[in-house]
Image 1 (cartoon, rainbow, N blue to C red):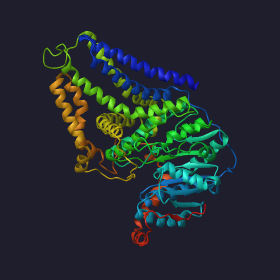
Image 2 (cartoon, helix red, strand yellow):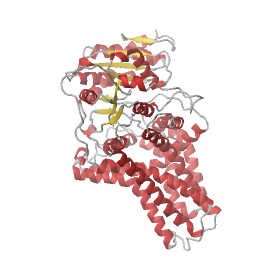
Image 3 (cartoon, one colour):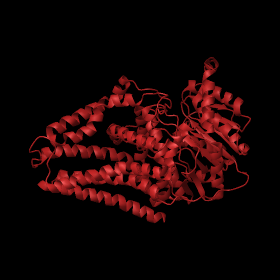
Image 4 (cartoon, rainbow, N blue to C red):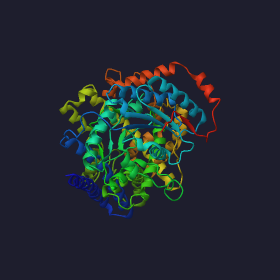
Length: 601
């Protein structure tokens, strides 16, 4: 069944690409096909195939029969699980408040003694390391009686996060049957952790089980748009991913549980020969680890029905682009891994998908550039006998409209179908009702349409930098970044403004008949600083208006662990323990010394 779904889905994407190519050839053929037309057809076919693949994931999720209850072990839990929380140069008050809330949540189950929490630090800043030590002591004082909590900091951080997890497995993994791997901003209900263990125990061949983390605590317009998308659209897309990937599913690096023995046997990552960006440590390690588990015969599965799994996301375009730059480099690295021996065919296909996710941006940019340049390099009929809209020959009009309708349909169709599905199934009630969901979807589509040309250039620049040999490294995440000022937005995007102006000027000079359509892309680019700054506006009132813009179930009815985390964070920050932390910081060791606190394993 999975093989048939995969074949049908790939056929759909290829059929859409061929249809777009046929329509484009008919459109370009009026004055005779020339070499630049063929270039445009190829670029359009590749881009359309990628759009169609995104659409087919949603279609699989929408039109599939909902999977029944998955196998789960019943009775008492006797296995031992470590909840591993990697941190890296982040505010420990924030990240440790997540741990405190999860410990209390697991304490409300009957199995707290079967779970240990391990904070594994790769922090390189000595002042932040000192704060981590201070707040770890405070964390132990508050919740250490519920279950065991450990902290260790590596003296150096080879392999980044993957190396951090590997180090924990080498030193302490033998003590645990399972590992729940989180991020510093992850949050998970204790009952969800228990359920994950039950599902792992029910299937001895299950090597890794991935949850679908929902984005929470977004404060800006940009962040809330992402939060709404993750809550409203992502469950449908994830269901499509689950059906297509079957037991060779994804691993997204966090909010997942793995069988320790399977991970230890399968997921030792090599250091790629050569220098970064294509050599060195594997940045997007999660896809590789999933492929290695599948290669060794272990099942890798995603269960989108698991609730109570959360994460936080960037609240502005600048921080989102910084994170995206690292993901881009990691995914392009997979070009050196896709031919590794023994991998499943689907795992190789997943690597290609990940590469295409970033190559798609420069492909669209090249298609736009070729379309602007084409009229200047070819003899074309006069489609503007009078000022105003173009007057195409009949065949060109039909082909152009069909092509435009198809592209727009692939972009917007899945979202509208998800909205209709929500009306039919009643799912929209969890988002404030169908009217509020409709308004949120509509505004999210407008927001995405404005941001897409800006993100296209960020991703295009990232691909060019990586191909030119520039290493982006692994920057620390700023998980509570505030509003981006207009000056900061200009500093980050002035080059996008320049590209947008050049694009408009080139269209005006070389292809004035396309100027109106070019403005839909280049206009947001020229306004990039205003868009970046404006969408980063932080307001607690967002989402509480009469329309309930971007309302999500997690926001309207926070779960117990979400409320607990906010209470702990507010209380800790109100205590103003800076003086105590400063006294610890004065005694800080050198940055390359090891800090071991509360580590007994």
